[in-house]
Amino acid sequence: MNRSKRYWNAGFGLMVSVAMMAICGLATIVPAPPQAEAVSVSEYQQKVANRNNLKAKLAGVDKALADKIIELDNLANVQIPAAQKATEAAQQKAEQAKGLADATAERLKAAQQDKADLEKKIEQTGIEYDDAKESVAAMARGSFHGSDVSTMMEVVTDAKSTDDFVSQMQSDAAAARSAANAANSAATTLNTSMNRKQRLAAIEKQITQLKNQADQQAASAQKAAEDASAKEASLEKLQDESAAQRAELEAQKSSLKTQEAKEAADILLIEAELASYKPSSGSTNYTPGSTSQQNTPSGGSSSGNGGGTSGNSGNSGNSGNSGNSGTTSKPSTPSGGSSEANGMNYAVPGNCPEGSSYCYGHNTGNTVGGSAYPARQCTLWAYIRRSQLNLPVGSYMGNGAEWGTKGRALGYYVNNTPHYGAAMVFRAGQKVSTWYANRLYGHVAIVERVNSDGSLLISEGGTGFASFPNWETVWPNGNEFVHY
Image 1 (cartoon, rainbow, N blue to C red):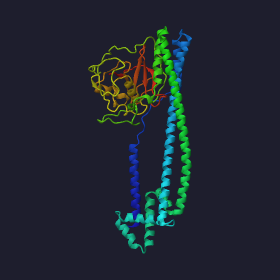
Image 2 (image 1 turned 180 degrees about the horizontal axis):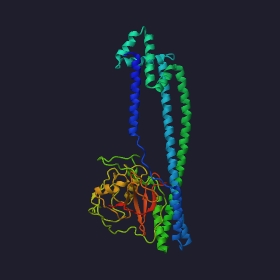
Image 3 (image 1 turned 45 degrees about the vertical axis):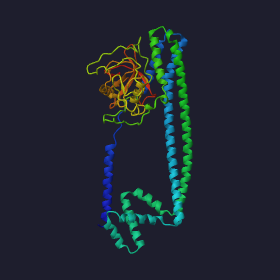
């Protein structure tokens, strides 16, 4: 085989490899599913409307008590969500800064090891040893044991001396490498062509630069961590303040005269309770094991994403007169709904210990806690909240839109009647309030209160919300509700 043909084959092989990589890349690059987008102007207008609505319901209420309610509303629906968002952003920045500092520290460690290795070689064979020639010779020896033996023998046969042999191999190898990967060849040639003294100086210069960079990044990471810690402390202070005001309002709630004011206070107390949720105080079962969807052990659909990735927070307080939250009346089973599970007690909170694998006469599907659900997603919050209420919940309930189907298959009581604690299922693309559930995954939320006008106060997760959890008032529209 002549040399030009050999180079053409190498180049052709490279083109084929690149083409295959491109095809594989196209096959694996899948566009991210569209996310529901919140409209900031609409969100602002809704919050203003909610505040005015709350004030209207407090007409005639003692001013001191009314001011306390307004202040708690501001804490729950404005200050705490903003503090949660700022805390999360600071924590992410701190993690990124630490990751960058760690990566630079690893590069510094590698450079120091390179220096130690080179100094060892210098000690063994001297500073003038020709590493470039050794590298080419090693390449030649590797080629000799390769598949193209005839080509190798051609070079050996034509060589008149050892230097001639090395020179021919250097030229041949350089041409082949250039055809295969010019950038890598240039980097390799640059490294091996420098004498040991130059390489040692270059490594020492790199170590100095990396040390300075590592020191700066470590300081930046420390500052970012301190900033995140300060923001977390501010958030906890607001949450503690909210808890104290909730206790005061609860003690004075009986003095409210109108039913509208009582219901407004009830709704606000729930919102304030949700705003005080602290992930660190939860069970380790709540910690998601991955930010991607997880496959079920049986090969079913994943237990991951919900469509509630964006939306308007604080969209509550739209209810009318007395509510029926906490009622224990038995909802009827619609056609297509599952029959009542054996041993069901339709009261909330339930009596299933957290992580129960069997409860209310059926398997719950809880095998790994909430670790299979992605961070901040609606499915993770649904798991957390159901566990808080001692209600059964599975580890692999699927995407938001799948909870009704998965629940029915496991024996949960599923129908179209809302009830406190039920998981409210939104179909893919279904309107939630001022936004729509994800067109692929749907959405799932937890019913916190059934208001007197038929609207529902729900809590929910979603990466687009300012807080985790988020809460808002919605209207049922053929939704499924997973009960027990």
